[in-house]
Image (cartoon, rainbow, N blue to C red; front, top):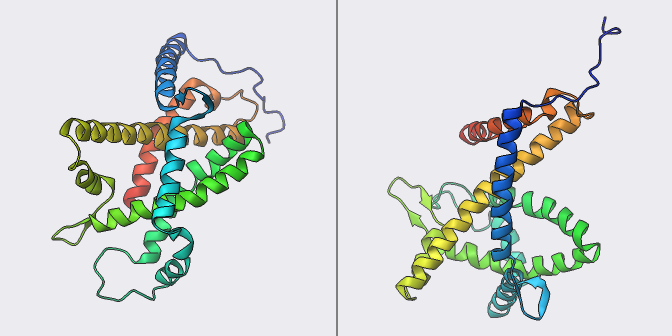
Length: 250
């Protein structure tokens, strides 16, 4: 029945106005990416191979590890007993048990950084990057512990039983001890960083990866409509809607 069906061999071309818009957007984002990259990943004089932000994160992780007495290793037994429900009871306050909180946190963490980031690091830095990622991850466990502890300590439990916590609850407590100009600047910088990551890392990167996989499976030779810019736009616009429906359904 389909033996004589013609197979397209020419690449689908976009209209000129679509190409013009694509070029304009690409040019605008190229300058923004270069500008933001120079700010975020600037290096100190004499240390050209390591951005300051990486040094800052590793230093903070080491300091927290030493201050808390290597809590990421001492607390393994307690953590395991907690997720098993040893310290849980039916009348505990909150919306979800410990195990569901753990799985929710892991689902939001594993993926963009732990899978895609590792692949990019190994590609750029070689196999040796694996050792440094493991070492940084072990120290980073203490940073994660400190963040989660502060989030629980300063969380807000509303009258209806819902819980609101996280950096926006405990950062004002720390910033209250700083000069107002510095506290407002740090708060604004944090808010901008969260917004930038939500748009770039949380949406654009994942939408790009989803589209790339769809093209690989459905249009591997790049001759179909899906491989065109219009197809990419349609796929990208449908991604936030699908994510919203999935979140509301969950």
